[in-house]
Length: 353
Image 1 (tube, rainbow, N blue to C red):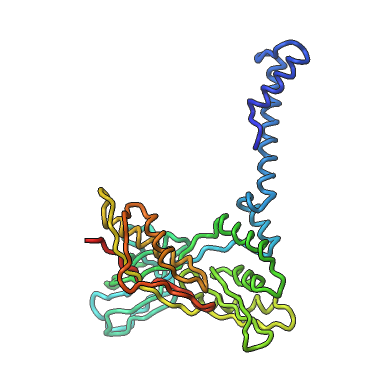
Image 2 (cartoon, helix red, strand yellow):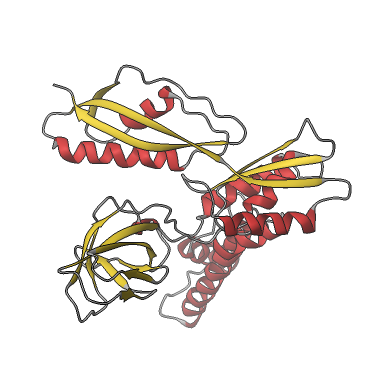
């Protein structure tokens, strides 16, 4: 811990008094020199304390933590853009094909978040509507949104056209934070990759943007073959991500070992929950918070991670405003295989009557 300015000044004044028998006058030359020197010593003390913290991965932050990660062959993950879809609807059918170009901008109800079409689409002559895939203008969790959140077309069209509906928007993530990166660094130290254990292949896969969990295991039916199953955040990764993982694996796999990279098999879970709301709390707000927290729980599940009612129950009870809860009949734990990623299909949260 850095020594304070006042402590430095007090030490110098006391030492001066002990040696000279006099008190340093604050308005005098000695007193002013002491205050200037105390300030410089305090600045140096703070800088040394900062260096001490950055020297170890368990206390380092920001760019310094990135350097520790690089020493372990790791890097901070970049944020991902949320993806979904919208349905464009014409006021009246046209006598020609209407081309909606790639990059057409749409926005949410208050205009705070923009989304763009990822490819060119066409509403055929005589037709009313067409579906388009969209992605967030930028990366970040704030772009994740529910159904029908995208409501307005920003790009100008000379014909009457609107957005009839939009799907859920998922997959948006922020850049990896310090705590998540620190956990991966710590895990790499605890389970040192050596080219022969699963951690080696999992760490390679996890270094690729778009991969949020990985499971490596030997193929018992084929000698020298390692299977690496990768998953995204609450979804299977894109094909481009799989291709990049396979390419990097080919460069770093030891001789005599063959690696097969595959996307996790997505298994959807439906959750029905009843909650009782604490007195004075708005039921709709509490239900919304529970839905959001359960969705987050499933997004954080890794490949091979099982669904346990006890774990989700703990998550629900931690939501502000929940007094009690119960699962609907038929809800049970779901075990996941090495190549399975459990995702949330739908969560139905209702208030107990």
